[in-house]
Length: 293
Image 1: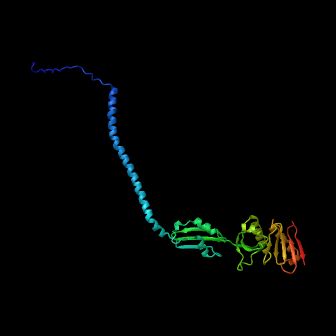
Image 2: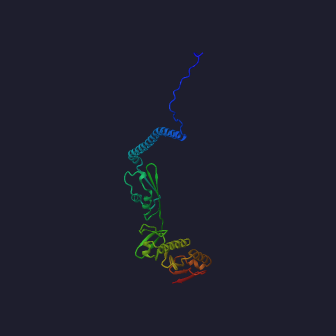
Image 3: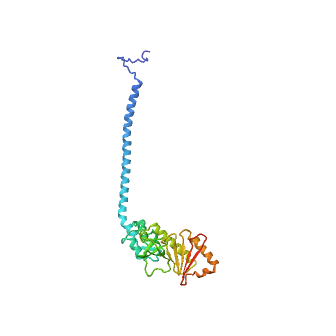
């Protein structure tokens, strides 16, 4: 029976080793191994990220360079494509078109997109006859200009010179033989104030123009207005002189017209005849007539 019994292997016992490990030490070893593994995997990720950023920067640089090259080569072509070929001017009555072209100052072969409409507008409106100007680009080759000219309002004499002014009191030019004779003739305006554009001179001119328009509603023919004294504006129509106060000239003239219709004797005040008649309308609710031989 011993033959069938297994023999127990004898285990050679040596000195006992202390194989117990502290959990903290094991965790430290695990962290060390994990850190090494993470470092090994992080390096490729950082390299990949840097590669992507570098590729993006290079791509943007290439795009910018490509655009710059396109613009550089396309610039001359674009200039030729948008070269101004037509300059149309609207609203001209007294000004010659050549004057407008000279004020625009366009160089030959100027591209439409390189024109400053603001600068051209300023140069046009510096012309004494131009009240307002608009400038616009019309694709592909047209520059369109529209002007509003000033309208002559009166002839102003300062004693030394006679000039044409518009309805806003702005000096247009010296009077010539070809100018309209039907415009009212104003005198008594301060010469220095007129040339400087002073407000007092301008107000005197506007008062004279307004007064002339009112009188012409009743009387035809040339009208002369002396505006030297705002408190005694004198309107001459033929041989008749009317005296107005600057304030409320419309009401003063309405009062005269009402009296003229009621009194037959006023029919003689028609601007004709050899006698000089003074009609003073400066007094409230009264019309004073002075007849002189």
